[in-house]
Every structure is written in C-alpha cells, then in structure tokens.
Amino acid sequence: MSIPSSITVRRGVEADLPQVLALIQELAEYERAPQEVTNTLADMQRDGFGPEPIFKFFVAENTAHEIIGIALYYTAYSTWKGKMLFLEDLVVTEAARGTGLGRALFGAVVAEARDTGAQRMKWQVLNWNEPAIGFYQKLGAQLDPEWLNGNLSANQLREWK
Image (cartoon, rainbow, N blue to C red; front, top):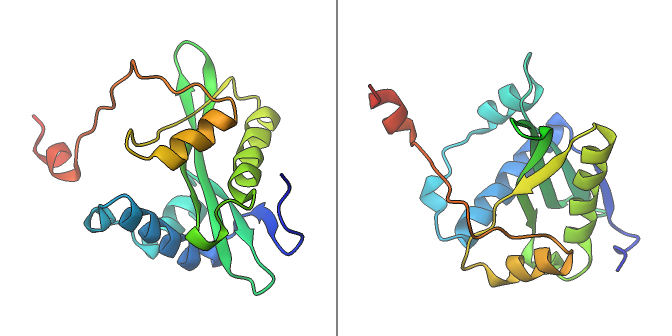
C-alpha cells in the first residue's frame, strides 16, 4: 500500500516540534496515560536540536502542512550486536490510520537503520494494543514475549541510593 500523493514523509525539523508534541499527547490519551507526558517543547528543542542531540524523527505531512504522523527514534547500543536504532514512538492521527502512513514512517526508520549501519531495530508495543500488534505482525516483525521492561521514574532516580 502506498501513501496518498497528498502526504509527504520527510525528516523532522525543529519547527515541527509543537505539532510533534501534540501528537505525543494524542498518543498518551490513546494509551490511557495523558498525565504521564511531562516532556515540554523546550526539552524537545534541547534534546533534539541542542549541542548534543539525542533523538531524530520523521514526519508525515499533508498539503496543509499539518503533521499527521511521526516516527521518533534514537541510536542505542547492544552489547551483543553493536549499534541499533530504537523506535520510541510511531504515531498516526486516528483519521489517517489505514492509509499506509504507518508503514511509510516505519519504512523511513528502517531505511535510516540500514543507512547508518545499525545491526538491529527495536521498539515496544503495549500488550493490549491489538491494532498496533497486528500492524507490526503484518510487517513481519517479531514480538518478543520473553523480555520484561524495567523502568525507574524521575523520583526513583533522585531517591536511588
């Protein structure tokens, strides 16, 4: 499935960040955790476009220059495999789902992984998000039930001894 000709997938730029943050908030609503988004526009400007950028992204944009999808990723490192890309979020607005846009954004990150010599690409999907699970399975991805995710919150990081 190819995306409509009225949609452009391109590398994200700093001016896109307000719309990107809005999509991140839309995703948090969908994932039933809107209160968990503490990231700010200033944080994203610093972390994506400051002196030491730590993430990159692709956007899908319509002819009205509205961003209707994003794929945000960063470089990570596997002690077993070496360089890898981690797809942090793939978000397509509800109205644009089913148009091939998710596949196009995913494909842009796959191409980036190839072009940068990554040995692996990883991401997470919530175990209850059946549409996303089906999407990734349709792409031929392996979803690994063996690994558990570990996290420490900002408070836990501050209080850790």
